[in-house]
Length: 265
Ligand code: SF4
Image (cartoon, rainbow, N blue to C red; front, side, top):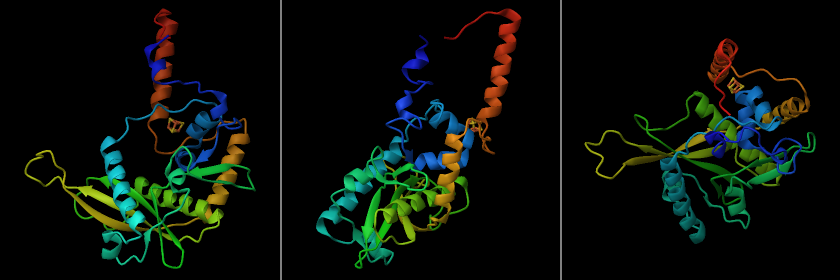
């Protein structure tokens, strides 16, 4: 067996595919559908996922430390200094299900009655206002020039807006009042220091994100129709992998035809 099978299984067990007992529609899968319906179909219907990327361990470390920091204030019932600085009258929300909601393998879940799709999303944090309204917050780490005070219109930033929108929608469907404005807790590492000296210097800002939820129902119907169809959906517009895959496949086949040698598997 080829070595790559140890790391990457191109034929996932059907129980994780659409219709299987373990399949659900995570927030990231919704985004994958928006990015490219065909790759979404290959993954969720046919069981072949794109190979993964290495995990961003520095970002994961920042997330873990933010979580600890906000948890201290959750336990104390106190406002985090960042919220105070930005005039947000809210404290970290304490709820018996919070750890499950934060777990990406569980998350907040809701079965949409119109499509029967089980939708899930793992939040980073929730804050609560004095009137009980929840605020969705997500931790982000990056390294960009200047101070991050707002979202731009890059695909990443649009994805963040959808991400917080799905969390809001899930919470609303679970009976909570949710503020339409979510927040990104943004840690921005400076590249302007003289030396590394075992240290990164961050500037942390709160970036408001106006969320929309009106697009979600229509998207769920489109996802359902795609998953129920036997036809391949179209490819996304900005991906380089399909032209690569097609060109590479044609060239490999041409070599096979010409020489009939070299098998990989
Ligand atoms: S365009 Fe990219 S994302 Fe879409 S099917 Fe091809 S490889 Fe996948």
